[in-house]
Length: 120
Image (cartoon, rainbow, N blue to C red):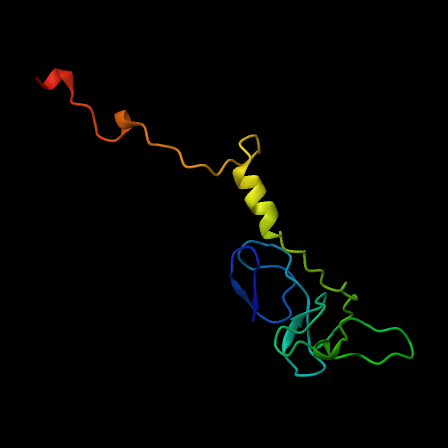
């Protein structure tokens, strides 16, 4: 049975167009490795993964699981130098620095909610 990609109607083997919607049906063939039915324009078998593409003369058909992977060389890791404790202390004690780490006193008006004057 060939299932129509447009309406999912099951058509008999050998049909060239769907009996229900007249959509052209894909041509099928069998996988040379496992015998499963595959579309004629498929690159790999959906059942076993066999490479269905023709290979140039002199090369044998490769199993897709055995295709070598090329990994580019990676650069060596570089660890940054830690900031010395003297620099941290200098930045914290300098009031003109971009980061001022001095403690600030909280605004007392923000400490507790103000009573609503409409509720009196």
